Length: 196
Image (cartoon, rainbow, N blue to C red; front, side):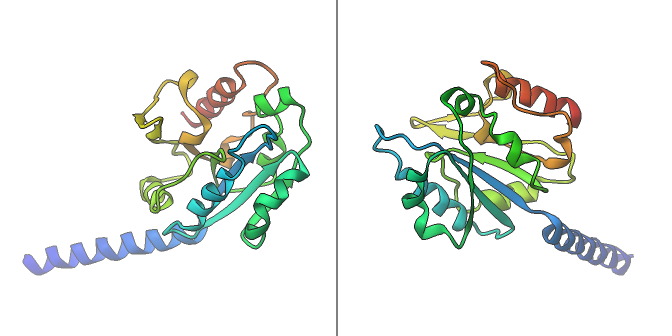
């Protein structure tokens, strides 16, 4: 009886390891960083910490896309050119504020999506933690984040920030950013409706 139980445990561990290996080979994180240059800000250098936090992940299954709106962003990215895809999108202020330019990028990628702003950083094992939680492409991940030394966890769609979610691109069929003041909320509503 004991040997049968041990055999079952070994088979379960082997199956879990096989699942993890298959998942690891097929799961890609597309980390989209929105870098809008601001000549009046001293915070443009934050992008270096943001990209560095992704490059420092314990899980290496990712691609980094940095969306820029101005050539003045390029000097901040020169040390990362081998590790990132730079996507240049000319946006006016309103389009940038409403994230409409993200629609073009989202149609060209496949896999899991995470959004970051230049002032966001990931903890060293963040992608591995998300990876471990994903059971299928139908999952939708939400996590806590720190802002002004406060830990925040928002479950209501209208209060969620893009930098706190991960989802699979297969759910983007009808989910698009639109030109309105609550564009992020509408995007998340249409995305979650497809998932749930």
